[in-house]
Length: 123
View 1 (cartoon, rainbow, N blue to C red):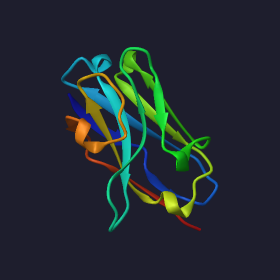
View 2: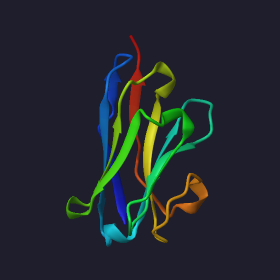
View 3: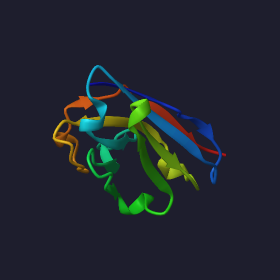
């Protein structure tokens, strides 16, 4: 499956953004989908993911209560709603697909990656 992430931009602290990850070329609802981010000079970190079959979710501690992942299989899309954004959230955000259908915070578990969308939180 090919993935395309979008929805990034420049926002002020405390603002919200919704990222979208659209899949094509595969049976999207069979895939677990994860959201990751990578800041300059830092490793890629797993933020949130959602399983294929039952929609179970995972959140990194630093985004719990602020970020919400959801999926709409009819639209081949997974969303990441990000609220109360902070300057530390500035990074390139990526979505990725795991053909096992499971949910993992580890990049190595994923088979396909989108191209990334830049989120900048600054006043």
